[in-house]
Length: 389
Ligand code: FAD
Image 1 (spheres, rainbow, N blue to C red):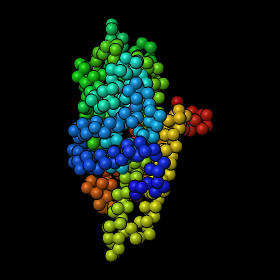
Image 2: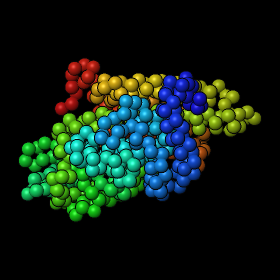
Image 3: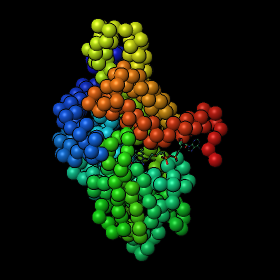
Image 4: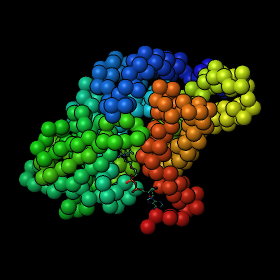
């Protein structure tokens, strides 16, 4: 068992799941670990990792070629995310945006013909996707406040508006853009190819978290797309909501993986760092930090495992996913803070590893629905009363 897997969680997985977890584990250590601090410092995604990830063939462990999910898709996605985040959350986010948000948008919102056109290339990572929902003026309330518009114009559509924070969009082959129909007010989805006239992307600079993920600020100015690029099976906001429900479960796993990685780093450090002639792991207060971290990681792992089983049985609803996201993101924040503390001053140096987890947690905490928004989703479900306007 791994250090952070105190209850031998790996024993509960099938052989195929263990094999996938092992592949990701080895890849993260061999390919990502040696370069991640350099790219994190440079605010850049290591694009040659895409080719290496392609060889891992991970998406086919989650999705079928027709866009349906494999029977244990959510657990698979979870362990892939966990293993990636133990080393580097940015890598998991790159994968989650392409293989989760963008892929699910087409799988759930595309016609049979559109799925055949885009999904096989996405599965093999020959073409990379991004997901454009959030806007500069609206993250939490984007469902009601969406300002990006689409207008029918002859045999195509004209898109206008802005999208902010769009992961992978600086280098993706296309981005799924969500826009409101000027005439009917319905939410529609479009696959907008990079290079389409009127579509431009500027990289967001100066992030203090997930610096290896490239986030773009997209401007759509009279951007014209043919009707065949409109996702034909989208059912308004319900489709966006279904996509986010799936990916929120994945983000809940990010919190667990990030916390587990931070705990493991802190444990290793406590076993070798000496002060007052002793290893700091011999001090009771340091052991207290480690045990509290381990308890949180172990409890979170139980929570997301059960959540994923519910999802794979078709029984996960929005509130189930929201509760796990809100809880693991908040606990992760506490665990990484403790882990950083165990490192003393070295905890703020990139070279010791834990600082990256400490920073990345802040993004996990706020995206895919902030703490407050996910809390209100659960609050509404359990009370039957909505706090939303
Ligand atoms: P706001 O909505 O402005 O919220 C600000 C504060 O107000 C928060 O604390 C919030 O909880 C609180 N608040 C708002 N409404 C309420 C309420 N009713 N009650 C109580 N409190 C409330 N989006 C994409 O579309 N694609 C991506 O690929 C993507 N990647 C991202 C990557 C990163 C690193 C980050 C940081 C964000 C990404 N996002 C992406 C956007 C992300 O989903 C939003 O940032 C998130 O939904 C929050 O929206 P906001 O930042 O506009 O905050």
